[in-house]
Structures are given as C-alpha cells and as structure tokens.
Length: 275
Length: 261
Ligand SMILES: Nc1ncnc2c1ncn2[C@@H]1O[C@H](COP(=O)(O)OP(=O)(O)O)[C@@H](O)[C@H]1O
Ligand SMILES: [Mg+2]
Image (tube, rainbow over the protein chains, first blue to last red):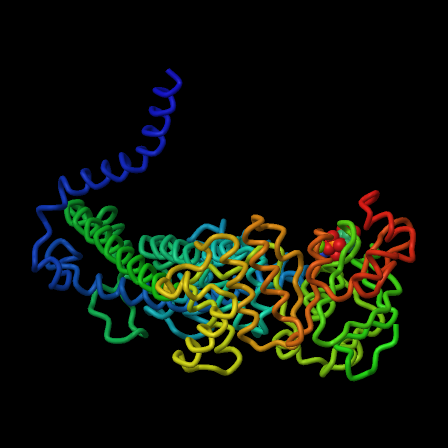
C-alpha cells in the first residue's frame, strides 16, 4: 500500500510537467501544425501575418536572444563570481547586491519594458531596435541567472579552493580553473532557464525592440520577435489563431534545439576539462 | 635547544594565533630543523592545525584568523613583517591535508594545473614530472594506465599518495602534513608513513599526528601541544627519545602516557 502510494506520488508529481507540456503541444499542434510549411519558415509576413511566413520574425528573435544571452553570460558570471568568491571581504556590499537582485527578479516584465524604453531607447538613443530589446532582456534575465550561478559556485566545497591555494595557484586561477568548472552544471542550467524566459518574453520587448515585421538590416533596426508575433496574431488579428499556434510551435522547436545545443556543448566541455 | 642558524628551516618567536577573540595558541617559541621530521602531537583543539596553516599563510583563508609574533621561514623571512609573495611561499611550503583532496578531474590534470601555474606549460614536461613524482610515492604502477580517469575515484590511500606526489612535484623545501593518515586504513597508513620517512634529509617535514607510536617511529623531534585554561602552548619540545622517555612537563608526561588528552 505504502509502495503503491509513493509510486502514485512520484508518477503524479513527476508526470505533471509532462502532461502540461503534452497538453500545450497537442493544443497548438491541433490548429497550428497544418500551417507550417517551407514557405512559412522562409517568407516574410504579409497582411499582418495572415499570409506569408515568419522568417524575419525568427531572425529578429535569434538576434535579440543571442545578444541578450551573450551579454548576460559574461556580466552574470562575473557578478556571480564576485558574490560568491568575494563575499567574505565585501560582506555588506554583497548583501545589498543580492537583496537588490532578489527584488529585481520579481519585477513584472512590463516594468523592464518601460525602463528599457526610457533608458536604452531614449537616453542611450538606440530607439526601437534589436539592441534596445536585447539590452532590456539582459537586464531582465540577469537577476535570475546571477543567483542561480552564484548558488552553484557556493556549492563548490571550500576544500578545493584551499587546495588550490596550498598548491601555489593564484586566486584568479583557483576561481577560473577549479571553482567555475565545478559549478558549470548550475551555470548552464541557469543559462538555459533564463534563455527560455528571454525567448518567450513579450512585454519587455514591446516598447524596446518593437513590432516591425520587416527583415532587420542591423541591430539598430526594429525587429518583431516570435512571442510578440504570437501575441499580435492571437489578440489583434482576426483569424490569426492558426498562425499564432504555428509560430508557437516554431518557438518551442527553436527552444528545444537551442537547449540541445547548449547541453551538448556543456557536456563536451565537461568531459574535456576532466581529462 | 640551540641550533646553528643555517640549520633552522622555521623559527617561531612568541607566536600567537587567535580567531577573533578566541585564542588558539599563545607565546609559541620553536625552531624546526632543516631536513628533519618534526611531529606535532597533542589533544584536539590544541592549535596544531592552526600553527601549521600559519607557516604557509593558509591562515589567511580562515575568517578572522590573526597570527601574531614572528613566523620566520627560511628564504622568506618573517611572514608577518614582510611583503610575502604568497604564491611562491605556498609552492615552497607545501601542505597535505587530513582528508585526501585530489581535484575531481583526471589524475594527469591534477598535476598539470599546478605545474602550469608554475610556468611548465608543456604537457610532455608536465607528464614527465608527474611520472617521477608518482613513482616516488609508489603509485605509478597502480595508475599509469588510467591517468585520464578521475583522481577522486581512487582508493583513499591512493588519493593521499597522489596528493603527496602532487605536492612533491612543485619541489617544495618544507612539507606540512596535517594528520595525513587519520582517514586511511592501517595498510595505507603504513605505506604513507614509509613515504614520509623517506623524505628525511631532503625536505623539512612537519607532521601532525594523533598516533603517538607513529610519531615515535618516524619523527626526529616532537612538539607536544597543550590547551587547558590559560595554557595554550607547546609544553614540551625535543628529540623523540628525550620527550617520550623523560618528559619534563606534567602535561606532556600525562598525555604521552595516555592518562589525559
Ligand atoms: N576557522 C576557525 N574559526 C574559529 N576558530 C577556529 C577555527 N579553526 C580552529 N579554531 C579554534 O582554534 C583552536 C585550535 O584549533 P586547531 O588548530 O584546529 O586544533 P588541532 O588541529 O590541534 O585540533 C580550537 O579551539 C578551534 O575551535
Ligand atoms: Mg587539526
């Protein structure tokens, strides 16, 4: 009886995410799958997205997300390292930084959108552009990524740091050759999860990267990302729901592909650094 | 005890160590002879590890740890007074910990990382030095065909020998062992003990041990630590036979005969 109950608990709780994902996939595939074709992937949208494809939208999405991911990886990792490795020396400062990050993580994304519009679009003069959107996303992704990475770095047992120092290694080498590699799993998970959030973000991008559906010529061009395209088709375009679902399928497909790529790179690197 | 200047590897003058306001050791005066094996014995919490860590400034990593007095290490001067290059100090004064602590990476890389820091960037040269060090600790035959496997998958005794080899590969002058056998089985203990004995004459060795028989077997000199009330000090220091057979202080005689501690 006990065994049965625990089995039910395991399958029920563990299976929940699978069920939710399956439901969503079935739901959007039901009306969206038939819309997906080669031309849907390669043509630019016409007639507000009712016809044509989503190629420019995919390109804008990749631009925004890859710029945001790259910047937040560097800044985020550096900040996480400072928070975990220097917190003994800079105790108070780190406490305040951490506290600010935890608050920022809970700020609604529309607020980031308004901030990005005011700061990146107007103060910095980037206007409605892929760059403004990417930077806004970066600011939004960072708190979560930093805290996850920091927690991963903290989990690395202190004895390895001491061992490194006892072997005459310099502080930076101890951090980058010993501590960071050992925290790589947490760092990668933090990256994948914040990237997923960036891919699906709508509100923060509405007022920053904008909704122009043209093919972007440069990062200073406005560009419509997938999530905004989906939102627009579903909310503002009568008869757009099938194409919204099709775009959502593409979004999920992209997400799966990117995750697979990141995990396999991380796996390869993990194996290489051990030997 | 008076030793000629050139035979002293470490000279402690009125050294005190505290953590914040908690005093771990006070008024320690000690001269460690070059090329000899000195054992630190004494009950837990008597400050043996603390003193060891002050010798290569690993004490810097402990929160609120303050070392006072003069800690004079040959080639570096007073560690408390001068601006010390910690990186070269720690290469020169190596340390083996109680629990074997190989990095969770391959055996080969455990050597390559510290060697590369020391300027040996060539993998072949690194491998050559690794082989020499592993042969020295008698581990080569056991691991030569699995150098790319993770070092932390070896047995405890093998891991500890690897750590000794990894310290030796940096060619230190002084090697500190903090209870190196306390996590090992009797067979592995015997092997490691033999290894340490073989370092006599070549390196200056300090070994913390709870095993008095072990101290008797391998050490030339013994320092007995004691911590009771206001006494937080080394209560007895001298060559093994003298300290064990005719201890001067009451604390030491009681501790060494197993009545206290
Ligand atoms: N990192 C630390 N922070 C605070 N107190 C410490 C620390 N390390 C050791 N101590 C204290 O210093 C004293 C000596 O400890 P230690 O040097 O580890 O002794 P031993 O190695 O002889 O067992 C003990 O009272 C211990 O509680
Ligand atoms: Mg100790």
